[in-house]
Amino acid sequence: MTVVEFNKVVKSFRTHDVLKEMSFEIKEGVLTGIIGRNGVGKTTLMKIIVGFTEETSGKVEVFAEKPFNSLKVSANSILVDDGMYFPVAMTLNDILKECERFYPNWDGELAKRLVYYFGYHLDARHPHLSKGKRSTFNAIIGISSRCALTIFDEPTTGMDSAVRKDFYRALLKDYLAHPRTILLSSHHIEEIEDLLEDVLLVHQGVAHFHGPITKLQEMFIKLVGKTGKLAFHTAGKTITSASSTGPYPEWILENTFSEDDIVRMKADGIVISAVNANDAYIALTNQPRGGIDDVFE
Image 1 (cartoon, helix red, strand yellow):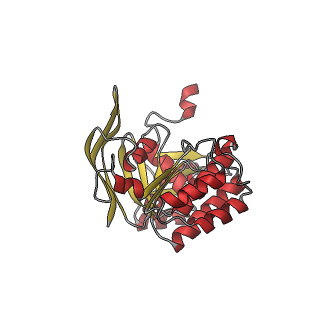
Image 2 (spheres, helix red, strand yellow):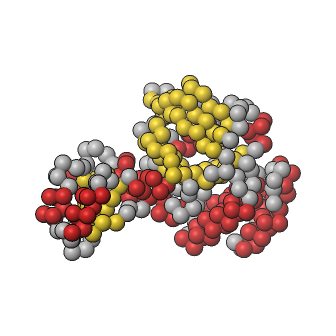
Image 3 (cartoon, one colour):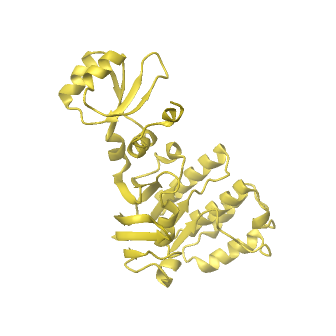
């Protein structure tokens, strides 16, 4: 079943379009990463999905309904971000009680165990928590709500590395035990790639790539070897990234090599390896004018 469908969706703010005829579908029960550079429209996209804001044109359907002003979408989805606000008059315990009243799939026992594990005092006030503690508490609500559509927009902002690892593990364990549709946006792609099934890469206002994360990684290849041999075997191909962290240069290129090409490169001493999701993401979104070094030329 399709949970989220975008068909030629445009979202405009005054003089520019943030989303430009964006089209994609997200199926039920898939954990999808929403990735892209800053300012490309990821947050706008997620706010449209949960009905917080309305598209300018095009068609959006969530649970087969237009999400804006939809009670069905509101009752079956949650957006966890750093904008989550709770009145200062409410203690953390009060918030958990209200969540139990609002979310039909709420797991109060899980929420209490997570609150205890992360060291909260239930009489504390949400606005008085540190940035990292607020983010962690918000994430607890997102996991424990078990909404049919759960969206995390940069949920680990302010968390230290140990807490981020605990959050990702908790999310994965609960997702495996209670499958639902989860969208996860993060700048720490290297930390979440093992969790993700699909990736939606937003770039220049469109869905630049949408598919299995393994397919994204297979689009590129890393070559390590002597410069002359690398140049010989990659003549006419575009190098998306070049670095020299060891004795030999490392080049990342689009993987358009045949099996015979691979055999010849290996015979010539070139080490060939797969790229991680972060390297593939950077390669797909690199600026055509070059890298930061060009600024200083």
